[in-house]
Each structure stands twice: as structure tokens, then as C-alpha cells.
Image (tube, rainbow, N blue to C red):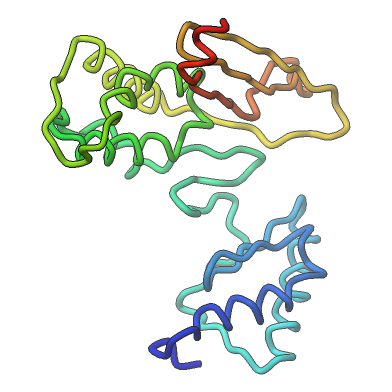
Length: 219
């Protein structure tokens, strides 16, 4: 399929997505990447065979040199995924930690985009980042911005949170969930976790949201 033509990528994704409709329990598609995941090696072989047969059935081909099979951990969309866990990739952590102090709205927005991609790993992300997101208010999108002590604190806290190499665990739907909520003057947050077989509480996801000005008044 010639990828230089208009709409070819869309058509390709549509075809492969339809191809994998019956495989959603063990295969995911992102653009032209297919990730196959399984609870055991035996199931993995079966799942791979199912996906490869479907690919062959419609006349598509896969380049072996671009494939990795039976990996316990994989790099996928900026995450290291496998063994029931996921964490930010080392390269992305380094990019956040080494990000220079922003001086313009464009630079602040770039940092927030990079760190915000991993907001699910950071407790109360929206509240922590509030001093930075507040600098983006107003119609001017490219001007320089006064860097305050609160901005520096938020900047450092987000870096530190990712530098700690946080790990999120996959949910076990056969066990109870623990839902905890928290709030601050700027926003609210939620953490979903479970106590697993090792009798340890493991975080599944952090969620947060910044309060609007109206919500701050009501609070």
C-alpha cells in the first residue's frame, strides 16, 4: 500500500482495525503498529497465530526485521509495558528532567505537554501544575512570562515526580478496588489502587482536574 497517497494511512488503519475486531482481548492497534499481549506464553503463541493468520488472509505483509516476539517488556508509545505494569520510558523521563527552565508561554506549553502525557503517574498533577497552567491564561500565546517562585516549585515537583520512576499496575478484576480522593485550593484528584497477592497496595492510576474560577468560589 503506497503511503505517499492522500488518505492511505486512514484506509490502512480502518482495514487493520476491522481485521482485529475479534482480537480486542489480546491485540491493540496504533497507526501501523500491532501489539499482542497474553497472560501466558502458551496463550501468546495462540494469539500471535490468530493475528498473523488474519493479516495473511487479507494479503497484508509484515516485515520480520521490524517485529519483536515473546517479549516480557516492550517500549510502546513512550511507556515500558509488561509483566502487569507500565512506567514511563527512560528517554522520556530524561527529557522531562533535563528540560530547561521555560521563559516563554511556548516553552511552558511544551513542558506541560511533555510532563502532562504522564499525568496518570503523578498524584494531583493538575494541582501541582496549576502555577504553570495559570501562566497560559490570556489571549497572547507567544509572549514571555514572568517566572515566579510558585512556577519554579511546580516545575521542580513535576520533574521530581517522574524522576522517581513511578510504576502503575494493571487492574485485577477479581480483587476489590481502593478509591481515594483528595482536594486542594486548585483542584481535585483520585487514585485507584488494589491490594494484590503480595499484600501490598499497588497504584493503578492517578486522575486529577484543576478547578475553574467558578468552582474555586463555590468551594
